[in-house]
Length: 198
Image (cartoon, rainbow, N blue to C red; front, side, top):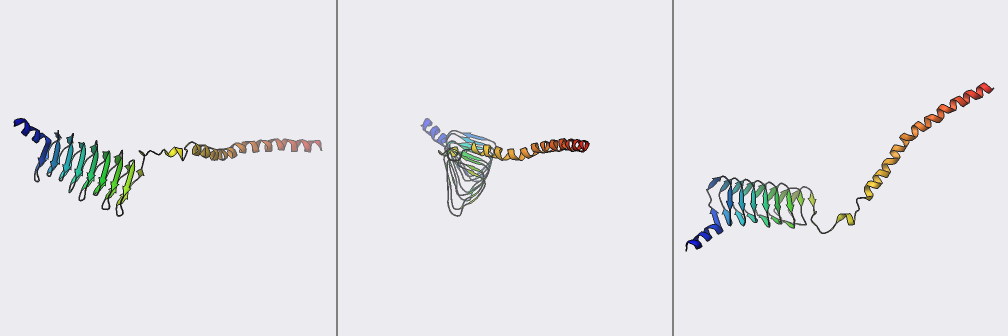
């Protein structure tokens, strides 16, 4: 019975509403957080956050709703940012669903889904991106993890060669100017010789 009770206490930990924790939390198992944490949270499992966090979060996956988070988020699997949630910090995960507000760099190895109520002020790196009508996005989007290699379609090596060719004519007129001056200098002595001959 004791082992069974210990297993349950490790599997799911609950921080109730009204609780304030000043310090870091490291947990093996799931965490449901409804209070306030001023510190980093680390879990090898799922974090359900319905409160406020000022600190970095590292977990297997994250679900945030009705929360305010200031800090970096790193998830081995997925992260879900639901409505009434504001995140000020970078997010790195396998997959991401956003229905809330995010300000920070987003680095997603697979797909990101941005819902119609999302507000995203971020530079986004992902494999795929799906944006619903009504979403607000400000930032640079790069599908750098996509299976398509852009250089197969738009070779980068030809563009610098063209630019170099365009730069060369700009340099040649400068090189021609000294050559134009030299014949003028030799023309004057010939004119003087003709005058001497007469």
